[in-house]
Image 1 (cartoon, rainbow over the protein chains, first blue to last red):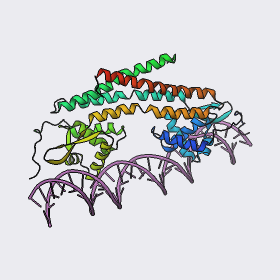
Image 2 (tube, protein in one colour):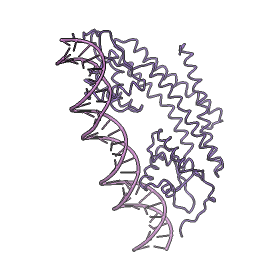
Image 3 (cartoon, chains in turn brown, blue, orange, green):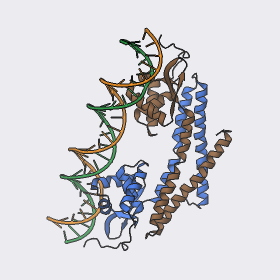
Image 4 (cartoon, helix red, strand yellow):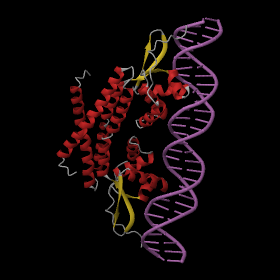
Length: 167
Length: 167
DNA sequence: TTTTTAGTTCTGTAAGTTGCGAACCAATTA
DNA sequence: TAATTGGTTCGCAACTTACAGAACTAAAAA
């Protein structure tokens, strides 16, 4: 017996979806994804229902299995995509993991940390140089990052409070 | 008459500078710079005095003129590097433009804007889909970005005030 | 005027990426 | 047991990028 279709009735898909996946894909390439990864992500953002099985993704994007496999692998490693399973169905259904994606974004805001310490190293190294003005300017940038490092968690806290967040 | 040396007396350079330029360079590659661009930027951050002429950069990094020329071109186009000149000296002295670099960083924080509008498009397209829960989650991410778009300028204002900023 | 200086611009190429196809594997079905 | 399903992994071809080398240019010096 082959896979019994328990999906909700196919609905009117989003109009011009192929083209929109391409456009969205180009946008998400800017977020450090390869073209195909970006297209997979874009497709999962636009698909209805929001989960798709491997073959459906492959068929839609007209790409090879290996390409889809690797794209999903990376998207899952990054936490932007996850999969669900259905009882009595061996397939995996891939979907955008919105919670993890949000966490990912929030973490990105914390990336000022390494900047502060890198600048700190530079400033320390420059301590005895003949260019106090340049060093002061460097210090100013570091202070700016330090300020952000303090303020951004505050902003985050404000959001959590506003959302009645449980995290 | 060839270029008369009016530089301040050569001082003790930063220890292990070659290695440190490589390390710092690797760090700055993460900020969308090619390896050589990142090394040039790193070198200008560590050099004493903080400005270097073309040949000194080339000699230090052991790269070709074209590579240095293109690296400086891009760093200047990005606003991270500028040059100064000295009277009676045809050479240009390249240095990190700290003010512009800071502006560049501050602008980067404004990059949430495109995200909001992209997500808005997706949400609009998904309006009539059969997955209200997914759509709600998407909306939540958009609201988060919208929140940031409002709050980040506030944080920036706070910094400007604290610095008695003149910009 | 010729030469030198301070670069820029134009190919060519080596190295790194991206994605395909084929082979492979583990679980399920026949 | 053999065949099918749902993928993963490997090796390679096509494309892209980063850098080198050489030819070029504009300004200054000789």
